[in-house]
Amino acid sequence: MSTTLQMLDQGALRHILEAHALYKLRKPGGRVANLAYIDLTDIKLEGVDLSDANLTGARLHGASLRDANFIRANLFGCDLRNTDLRFGRLDRADLRGACLRGANLTAASLIGADLREGQIAFKDEKQGLRLMKHEKRPGELDHVIFSGADLSGARMTGILAVATDFSDANLTGAIMSQATMRKANFSGANLTGADLAGADVAGADMTGAIMVDTKTAGCNLREADTTGVLNAPADVYIDERPLTDFVSLHEEWAKTNGARGTRQSLPGIDFRLAGDMRKRVLTTLDAEGACFFGLDMSGVELQGANLVNADLRRCNLSGADLRGVRLIGAKLSHANLSGANIGPLELGGGRIMRSDLSRAVLNHANLSGADLTRARMLEIQAEHVIDKGCNYMLTERA
Image 1: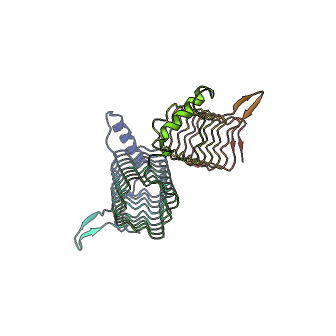
Image 2: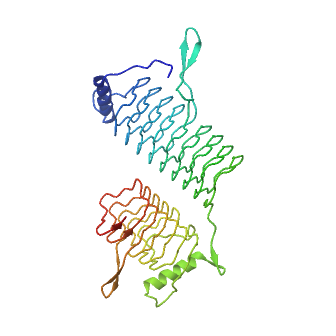
């Protein structure tokens, strides 16, 4: 930056952080941390709580801030180039004019954050007003990694985000109108209700993105790869009967061991409007390549089901009975599988059917407390998975 920033020794910084901690606890001696215009280059403050703090114009270039809490913090005009903010919490933070070029915000939470352009001006005896400048232009988000981040409701009007990684990010309701995001990676991103009006996303990777009610008027999509984009669901009718009828028929068949109802084969079907899927009994359902995106399927029974290549991204499968399920090549990014039983299914006579998740995509999934006993998990993609308490006993992994 061209502006001279103040340096702090470790003792002074520690005193500020301790006073801020007291402030958050509402204890005597507490006060909000004021780190405005402080040079904190390459600082290591993993897990620090600076929620509500003032860091206007601060320099945090190259800082290690993994798991840090900046909720509601004032980061206006902050230099965050090449900063490690993985898993950070920046909900409702003021990031206007901040330079995040090359920063890593993988799986960070930026719900309602303000990332629009902005500039800080100082009085100067010779020049009148002098702008505070980063080495790169203000408000720049080029090459930032937002993979798996939650940017729902974030304000990004007019941002410059060339080659930025938004893969698997939650951009629900985000405002990106008039933004320049050429060659950005939106693969698997949830753009439901997002505003891309007038934005430039030429050459972007939008494969598998969810674009339900996305505003794209005047959006430049030239040479963008939109393969597999998921649009608004439509009511499914089979032989002029609604999909819900066939789901109910299969459930009756499963509950009565075949005495009533009919076992269903529904490959490639879009289940997003199939009604309440919680605690449904859908044992051995054949739904290869089907779409369940975002559904609440908590407690569902899908023992022995065929879900090969199914889209289960962002589904709530907590507590589900998935014993013996076939999830080969399934998309399970951001799925909640906490407490799910994905172990073997007993078939009688000492035989078992192992669950198979080979080649499944489990990035950012929650497997905490899940049972994966004897499951096949060959060639899976499993970046940033939460698996505390997960049972991997005899799991087959490459």
